[in-house]
Image (tube, rainbow, N blue to C red):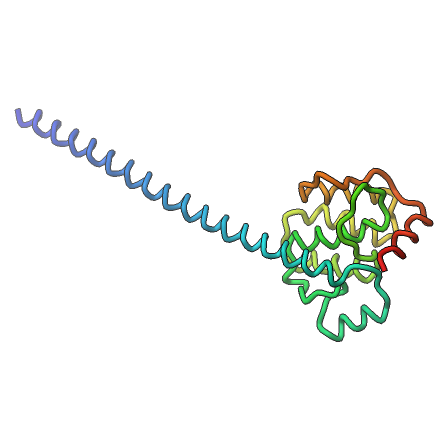
Length: 191
């Protein structure tokens, strides 16, 4: 009889403990999911803010670049693209904006948004920035920039489209590479 009571009590305690453990686990899991959602939301808001900031800056600084411009940017504490963003502040959106914009002078595309003249100092700066920060698509950016550093533009349309795909592009896919004359004409049209 005592044995039956002890077994019954142990069984009840085991079942109650199991229920408590399951509810405790589920409750903590819900809290973690809420925290993850908040972190994702915060991260997404930061990315959206960065993208909006870049788009606004694009209108002010697009076009060709001279050595005087680069010197002036440096004196004002700006990067070679004419913005205040420092190397250690660079995010994926910045690399995408600058690489994508620089590729426009060399590619044929139905529609192009943004233009930054492709300049060796800009390429060097972006490569140095990649050494300063951790970004999701670092390998893609580095591969493109290292080719450009070597003046290799034989796949610049593919380079453009790699960034275009990362940005979920739907209009403006590069369909070829401009001739030297077409490139010069495009650059002059952006002044």
